[in-house]
Length: 631
Ligand code: NAP
Image (tube, rainbow, N blue to C red):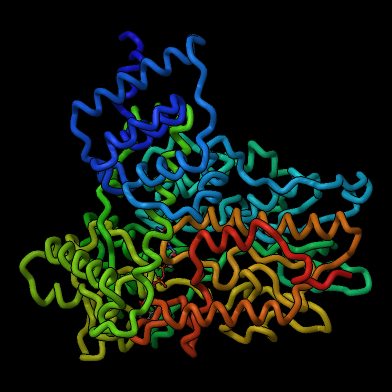
């Protein structure tokens, strides 16, 4: 078979990013208007471009690329702000406000703008760098990103990782159906694009392999101590160092000294087991989703699953075909949105375009950034005059509610009891918005029971509900989430004057400036810290890169100015957290009718970011030395 021609290859590309490639390379601005009205949103399936126009674009793009590669033409200069603005809005079918342009240009590499990297302003002496050492706790995605950027600056580091492999959550979670529900071409490092993702939302194994590959390419492994769990870290003012204690798999302990400590353990690392009477007496296998035991056969067995969050949503439909009965215990329903690409494979033509067409991958990433970004932000704000505040927050949020109900109704069929159980009574986005993984359709099956009666107790062979009904079970699946409120637990992190993080935060009230630094804990940086969870969109990796960038800026400031420690000022920290609380007070996650892992017992939202992605990116691309006390 002969190799397809360039023109043939272009058949596989989505039209909107291909149009941007064409306009960027040719400078032919007039073409944008021709296509604008047919691009109605940031996803490929929102393109409605007539065939004749598609052919026109592919013909022109092929001719242009031929001319460029033959040297008959020169690529147009990088688009200026006006053209870029018109391009970004056309590309996503929505007006993109001007204040996003710097972020878009830098993060997506658009318009020839290089991504923001932290480099030395005045390179420190080799000896200074040699003497500075950072300990990073955790080799998950944010720990690896930290290490990569430290190495780039020539700063020495050691990662202590409790597991035998890198990957953090993507190593530990291996339950059936486990995978990412953020679009993958955005849920990846901006500096390590993968054009070969097999699916738009990749399964766990592929994500884990990606992180393994990154660790190898950047040669991080020699600096990682695997099977080594940090138990304690304490700051010593006299030496301006952290003393980090860790336990190896063989029980031996080790102590490391560090000038700075980066805690990259995430919020969702320690499983939360439900406090249900009799749990320990269950006779069959009982496993938390994050501690899945592959040796347990589910074939023909009666499985009881407690919990219907993001993990349960993926497990249920993935095991239903092989179990005899699936009894699902739902304390409260979740909203779930349908995306036609959720199970789709990335077509070869798309992979080719991503890997070979200049700028295409950047434009495609920008579409995903926008699709899962701040577009939703407005709909999550309380309208004080809204007449049904229990059910929705504002007109936009209400319209979303109606669309979601329509989807559930279509999926569960003509069963009013099931519909009533499946539709949440709180506003959309109150808990994490899930992606429908075939969940609602699964609920219709004869072998599935959706049980909403609260659980009274667990017996050796059954789950018993408050109404006395026994639900026999051979295997128990606990899809009950994580102890996000006890961030950094069970480690003991002790800052100045013997005060620990637990002393500051209590059991469930973590706070930090930008989610990164805490007063009294000098040279200590949190990744995915308090109020940095993204619940309206975005990618956790995008946010990690923001936190890593800020951490590098702080270390640069410290090292270049020859000081030994930096400690965020309490008033800066407190003022920031007041703003966080004030924003949350009028956002969906603090809604009275919602219980979620985002909130603590007093209803304070401690996990989730109330900021637009744009705000957080702006906060973390600079550091104001006046916010810190340097010594
Ligand atoms: P989760 O969202 O906290 O869900 C836990 C579920 O267990 C909820 O349905 C909860 O009910 C229920 N539950 C907890 N304790 C219970 C009890 N004692 N009795 C009855 N039900 C109980 O946990 P998760 O599903 O593991 O997800 C956690 C987070 O991890 C997600 O929000 C997401 O950020 C991340 N995650 C992402 C993916 C992905 O990208 N695909 C997959 C999995 C997880 P209530 O709702 O009533 O509290």
